[in-house]
Amino acid sequence: MSAYEKTDGTAVLAAVEHTLTFLGTGAGGGVPSFFCNCAACLEAAREPQLERTRCSVLITGRKNVLIDAPPDLRRQLLAAGTRRIDGFILTHAHYDHSGGLGDIEFHARIDGIAPIPSYMSRESAVWLQGAFGFMADCLAVHVIETGEEFVLDDMTYTALEVTHSPGTFGLLTKTNHGRAAYIPDTGPLPWATLEAIRGVETLILGASFWGRNRLPEDHLSVEEALSIARDIRPKDFYLTHLSMHYDSPVTNHELESYLAPFGGSFRVARDGLSISI
Ligand SMILES: [Zn+2]
Ligand SMILES: [Zn+2]
Image (cartoon, rainbow, N blue to C red; front, side):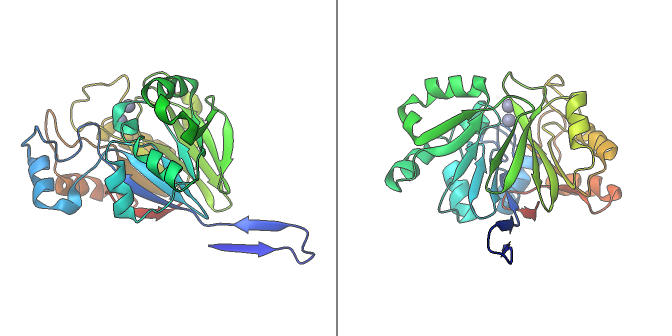
């Protein structure tokens, strides 16, 4: 982390470095899934470092900003050693991205930090009121439209249009150090989003399916995500929101070998991995 003050002392310009930590990199069922005995689930049961909890990330600069609150949230925050959440962004209300939101209640109330600045679509805010109305006072909700920008902890976020359930967005982040796109749950990307993310240093895409895409309207397969990455040409590309199973399961080792020919900058994210953005 670095910051400097102008010599006249009138203004302080920040040059905070931000880290993105993948708290969870699994799709809805997690890996291993309790109901599955495929090669990928067996591999993750054998090698716990390959386990994939449901999808979320933590952006750390001076503060901690949590993106999504999956049902695994408590375990994820413990694993990452996170003691405090200063901001929250909800990409959408599906259970695998929101089911753990209640875990924040105790932190917000007991540590006296409520209400936590929180950003979400109108659809997500309506859902929140119904599902987590008991903790409405814990979050200061800012409703965000697609294309809108907001600033949290010296980072500018833009909500990106995606093809998923109504009210879902992806995120473009901007700092003095560069731009990154985090789009965990989407089908084919709309033209405006492709244009917005062109030239990003870091691209992170959800790739729920390997082989046949069972939900092609609103999810990407590994192959489809790769084809977007080849078009966008980021410096670094990460796959996340991975189910690893269904029609033809793929183990982590197989997926890494599959990405190898694309060069070291195309990678499979893992739970706990931290990168600079
Ligand atoms: Zn999801
Ligand atoms: Zn979803």
